[in-house]
Length: 593
Image (cartoon, rainbow, N blue to C red; front, side, top):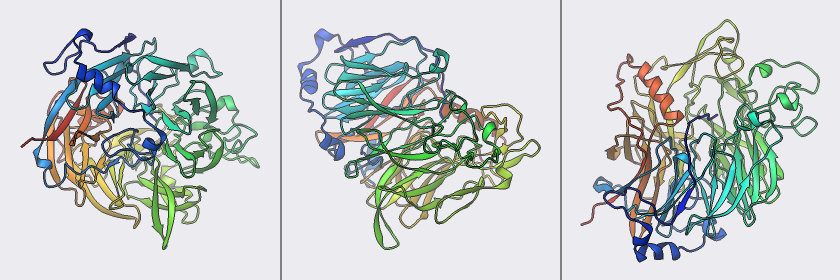
């Protein structure tokens, strides 16, 4: 799960152009060049057809396409010339923790950063076109991104609103306040982390509810009006499907099931796919109550949920791990792809949780197809080849006496830095952290109510390298190559048809790897940590690569503390610089001849 508390003072500010440093460029609204006005005016409406099949030049959705590949077909920047990549421009962003995904359409970039601040930029030079900052009394939280449709930008806020802004002016079109039948104190624990998903006329948003009774939910609001059309509760209700899976707990005693990563959409099947997180309230679920008809699986935590976007109807679900006692989320991206399995083509949904295990399910029915364990965990002892049911190793069942070295650590083999999938070579590129933990005993306090200890430790055979990019052939279920480095990755992987994989690390580096063997072909060093979702796009025939850097959000800041504690491990080195937390977007292109 993803918790973050950042104190901020926010103002509401909407204008066509504001005073903001862009290298040496700053200007008032009266000085706006007419070419910049034309750039906004000439933006075409984003249609359903565009979202389903984006122009090669654009990055319109969180992972570019509905199938969450995180892959671009652009090839101008490729293995032969990436060594000539240079900074094209940079732009300061509001200070604070970022995990942003820039979106680009018709030469305009939209970046939703810290302090609930959204800025529209000229994607060729970073000049500001307009900016909007949402006013809220609630502490700001890092967001993954926004969504585009028509002339609207859909924006989740820290005070649990979904806004529709005019993409050409930044003006508010409608404002929807999400509500819930909980106390004001409990309501304050809700958060919106993920970008909205636009599907079948609906704006679909997952809600984080880490300690809130009744748990998380997925909400849909009408794209045209902003009115709520449906919500799906991610914790099964008593008397309903899965309601007997909570060890006899009442609804008020159930929590978890947060949805903080954006969903995916298969337009042909008309299904949306979301992942859910576990619960921190693990103590009441640790041991079964042994009552007929009751179990402690805790549905629908750690599940893939397939819904109809128009109605929220549950079509199918698949629970990846039941009764998770170690916060091993399966909330991350669901990738939709066609694979050959035993000589037949299957439309599948593929996802991996913190355990570093991929599960594949039939996209239409949810039928389990196969798993692939990348070999970096020892919590799961076995996986049923027919159902995918996972059996926990006896050493990984918390108790009051024992401590065992368990892998991975609570931040996982993987976390929110998303995988990318290249459909050309069937490889998934996975940002990985190789860190374990002393698991147990219970009763020691901490985030889990069992009190099970989770002290980070190097693996028994650690060589001091804790970061890895792993290439996986998901069709043949083989590990193809790995690139390993000292510190963990802090960005999503970005794959391109130019034969490249871009990735950023805790040491402030940003690299381009050869997608065939992991060789580093290009690297740059930032004064801050890249911790976002890199994107690539093109304008007027020129390709760019963009990444947001800045103040460490909870993932990067936690890794910084852990890596500092590992300084005695052979081969590890300290951070080479002190990060100041100055947020910005950094954009690169090839040097001009």
